[in-house]
Image (cartoon, rainbow, N blue to C red; front, side, top):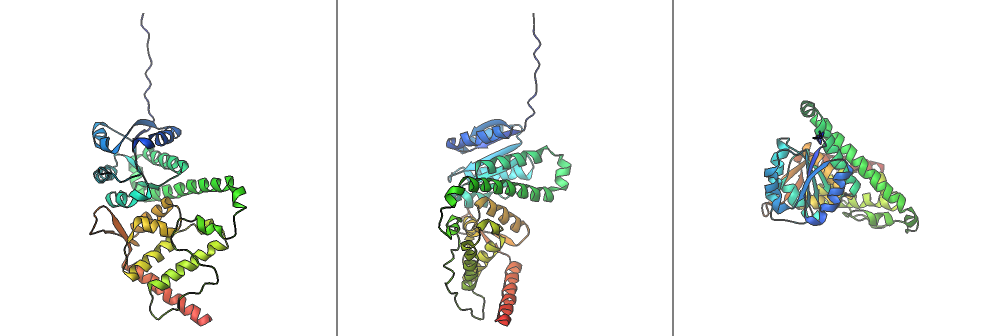
Amino acid sequence: MTQDIALCADDRPTLLMIAEPDAWGCLEAAATAVGARLLGSVCMDEAAIRLDRIAHVDMIVLCCARPHAALPGLLTRLDAMAAANDAALVMVTSMDCLDIAYAHHRAPATQWLCDPRDTELAAAITLGLRMRERDPLLRDIGREGDSARIDRLSEEVGRIARALDVLTERSEASQRPEGSWLAERQGGYVAQPAAASLAPMGDELTAGHIRALLRTRRLRDHFLPPDMFADPAWDMLLDLMAARLSGEQVSVSSLCIAAAVPPTTALRWIRQLTDRGIFLRQADPADGRRVFIALSDDAAAAITQWYVARRRILRDEL
């Protein structure tokens, strides 16, 4: 007597995790939470061999918490896969690995996360897999719109996660001294007390003038909640302008710190502003493992013109 066995195809989207073993548990939990079929977790040393053996994968999540010798070559290969639309990519880095990863991987559709919360990682995986489900022709036609939509949805999920953190810690927040919001920011320019005076302005725009503007922007956090000023684009523009005027170079990680927002949010803005030609990628001649971010000439000229117009208005009013 024989028994017929119905074989059901598993049509869930497939996912491969590349990370060190200590991160496998967290990443696998995220894959399970979003309903993906995990093909496995592999460390970086074995990733190239595993990729050779896989006929198809819908998404690859690469988690690089520490610099690794295999990372540059692996990033170059994933860059090529992304360009060929072979797989959606989620790049998870720490601040220590951010500059190396950013220098070797340039695929525009990659979702970048830096020290993300679990909700941000799950959201990035979900959004990437949803985009893979769409018809390829439609995806090619609407690629620019899809990228912007992913950015907005990812940012919204991150904002909700941060709001939940604030709500759960409300009792502690009520005991904080006035002005403590400033210490919660990611870094960058720190404002002195409101009574601090600014350096006198000369006739020529200098790095000191720009940095004084950044310090006055930070003064807002002494009086108003910082989440009212969540757009980091202007802070990054000013930071790069100050660096340009002082002859300094700015790494991706340094620019994320200057943005005074979570690194993942800063990375989205860096990508958008680079795509629009406002920011430029510049190779580090002394270290091929990283790149610098700089202002384009047109952006620098626009900021200079804005500064002159702003100064004229203030002078007329005073």
